[in-house]
Amino acid sequence: MPTLEHSALVEMFRDNPGLASHLIASVLHVDIPSHDTVAVVESSLDQLLPVEFRADLVLELRDAAGAVVLAIIVEVQRDDDPDKLYSWPVYVVVVRAKKRCPAVVLVVAPDADVARWATQPIDLGLGFGTFRPLVLGPASVPEVVDPGEAAREIELAVLSAVAHGNGPNGLAVVKAALGALDRLDREHAAVYFQILWNALREPMRRALEAMVMERRTDGSAKSYPFVREMFARELREGELKGAPRRRAQGAPRRPAAVDCAERDRAHRRRPRSHPDVR
Image (cartoon, rainbow, N blue to C red; front, side):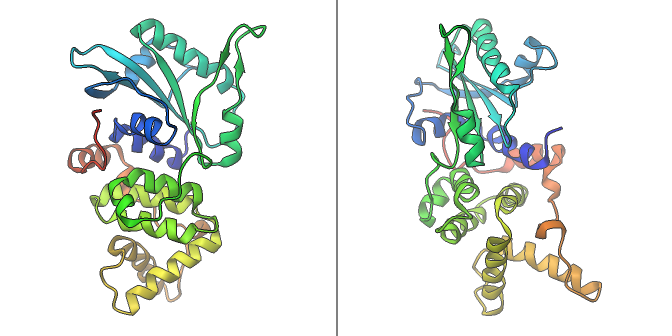
């Protein structure tokens, strides 16, 4: 059963169909075929594969005539899973045969060890064929610390905070991502904040909370208003019970935006931070 954190990362790519191809080109430096549109078509793969083979998301890049020039199968991977070494090649073969187009698997692995595991070549038999997915992990995701870049590349800023938020420059990376969240509607900001928060370890969570609440008390009202509201709600709820209260592992209340209906409504309102078309 996928976790809510897993589902939130999948939603990031589903709500922004051009994100996967954008990151493959700009972060992994792999050439992407020229295309006019990107479509989410995961249901098509579901119809082609038996129940034990289910990808997280399938995207089709199409040219002006509607022909599919590339299929991208997106897989969020939070742990090692030996079964994926057999299912990932299946995804590519089935989509390639059905759509008559090139196909790749993009593995999104927030954990560095999982990302290294996912990059291993998969021998298809007697050394005569090898499969290797594209892997987006901490080693490939840059540290986004510039607020201007974070505002232009909101999803990349969030992924950067997930990858590097606990590192030496963690607070600068997290601050850049938080500033970018204020450009989003509340539903998407809540989901992206939850992705970021869940990736942070306790010392960075405490440093972040102290920084945000300090700016609240010193009158810096324009600093991270959405995040300040999240923390302030936690404090209010604790005070109503007579003592400050923390949720499990220090996490704020999980936002209602993860509900499917809320996601659909938010998707129609959410401004894109990058184009779908190249």
